[in-house]
Length: 151
View 1 (cartoon, one colour):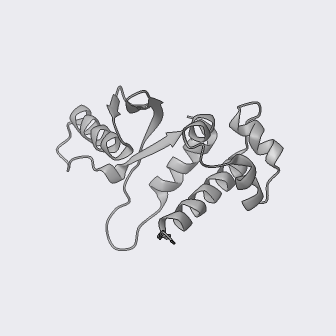
View 2: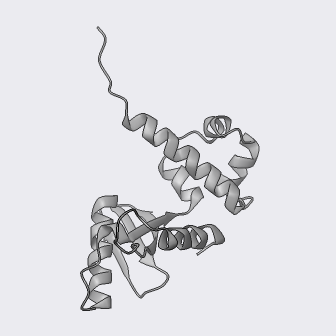
């Protein structure tokens, strides 16, 4: 995994949710797109799986990891599965997200963001986090919208 993904995974495993429960240890999986949906593999365990949707992929990854670990503790849940995607493939898959417009929204140089997307340059951990925060902000905004047909 690159530095960003390791840092994110460490943050997730060290953060404590409210209440008395122990934090959930995330199991990182690298996600790739296929002609029929998605595939994911673990860099930490000998696991690979597929799914037509990200939800199905997450369920399949949890089930496969649970079978591999075969521990007496509770089964692996989908909340413990954390997906990482290559930035270039992400923007290729989600072309509806315009890199130039996203750069404007996060107050970043659009040429530099385009170089990150094309893998001509590698973003720092901070830049990667900034891009991810911007993408998630757009996703939250879109999730809160309802459309009507005006005639």
